[in-house]
Image (tube, rainbow, N blue to C red; front, side, top):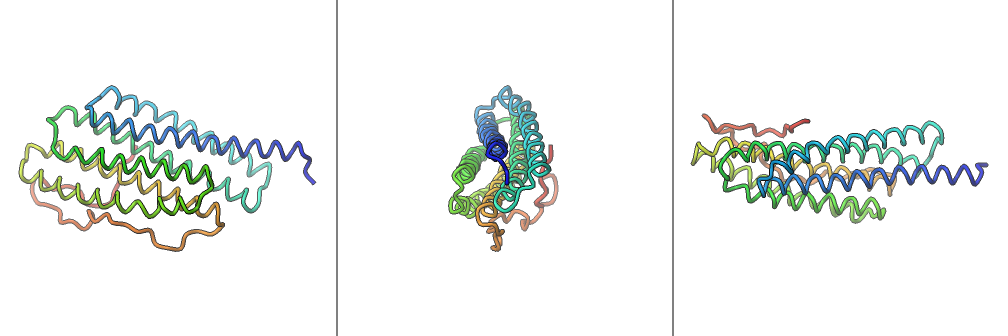
Length: 249
């Protein structure tokens, strides 16, 4: 039988793991918010800060991996404890990707600042606000161990997909009508896609939380409303990629 000391040490290590995830989540929230603010205010200095802070998230992900590997190797957890450790690795990976996408938005905003203001830029903060809400709600679900709240996030991603598809079509029309807007429009398209992918990773986390709490994965197909991949690729200088490919670091 394990001693009380060993159990307390084990509980403390699990708590450290959970706290590292929570710190990563806080950084993800702030990074997304700052990248949107940098876009709206055309603040290149703030955008550079977002890009530079991405290293902090990478360091936290490495900390989560080290803690999880230690727990797996030394404690040989079972049942809920094992799910918690495995889930922490998945959640940390999704949070790291969310911060990568926030950094991508920030990088695009720096380039966008070199061009005249594009009219459809108004949709970026709308998308950003939705993405921030998904991140906040899914982190609350994790902290509270609330599977219902996680499911709400899982279902709410549709709204972000619909907004992305609407903006995609609007930007194509905008670029066709005014070829001078192609550069700015292309940056906005990539920014919008990165925000849409942030929503996807928030729903990944929601699925992981559901598995953590119930011990079984979600069997339903994830609802998706992103129709940009079915759009017709326009000829000439306004042709842009309409696949679901994503920007990387």
